Length: 441
Figure 1: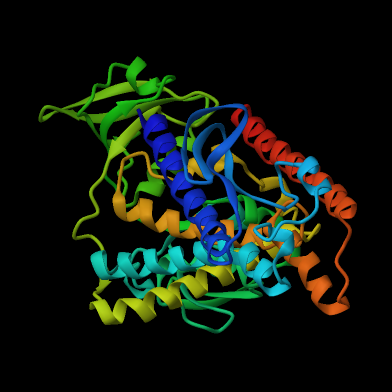
Figure 2: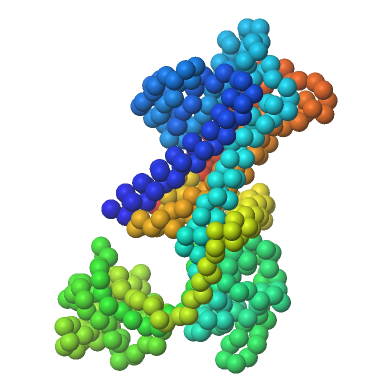
């Protein structure tokens, strides 16, 4: 069920984004009296799932969910309609329009994706406000992964500042460390203020480790489900049982429980369990994974003091624009890392599975619209890249025409389109291949 919910959110989100993007091209094409032959959600090689003719335009839904397109007369695009280009230009064709009109038609999709993101962010802030945990309210400190330990962090550390600057929002700590080229982290440990230096060699691990640091939470362990391989279930523990201690060791924080299990690999442990109010002990054999094979229930309500900023309608508009601006900046930073061989960020490049996994396993409209807004920004940035077959490729050739007052030949544009499509298809295979490989690791 979780997979279906994530898949449904992904398909709905991408459908919205593709329709809005293509509508941007469509609107400017119609504004400048270009003939639009097709408007399609998804691609339709050989056949379509649905189509209808309205005026001069065929509207439809294709079967290949890799995007969408509008087919504008007199334009070399993914349709590769070379026969039309051999005929003399007609007044309603794209190639007959002025350079600035063609430029606006090509950037229309990117522009509408950016506008959508800003509208969504503003609406989200107006509807739900902005809730976050102030860093100073992370009263139990942090829990760190092996990568965090390589930096010098320890469980229970409290982040004071990053490169001498305080971070107000706890959730912004990891993006700041990963994206901003941070050189040092100041932490409070056992009433001592320490400065930890971040070496460049650790950057590739920072990019691939999603659990560098997380919020440290009090211990609570009530079993709500079992894993397929579950030593706890094999030992007779049941749903609803509470684990009180292991080998007479009680825990204040949940990470202490996890560390105790990890230290008990290939050993038998004595688990204190409360079952329907009755306390008993069970012998559990821990395997090589260092896991007990349970899913626990935990409720953090009232444990941490969160802060919520509420926005009026007028306040939400500039706040949404500001949030969109920051999101564009953060994504450009990620993109910069992708092209840096030293970071090896390209190894974490993902396809549809990776995108689908960013959606929650339950349907939550606030999360859905937040993620859709960010994906809209990603789509805008990706499409404006100066790669043939993308909007940015067409824009690049139009800018060349503006500067040199010479239009590239149709044959050159045709070859460039083919080269761009091959490159994009290769990247698509690589990204989705990465997803598949991760499933088997």
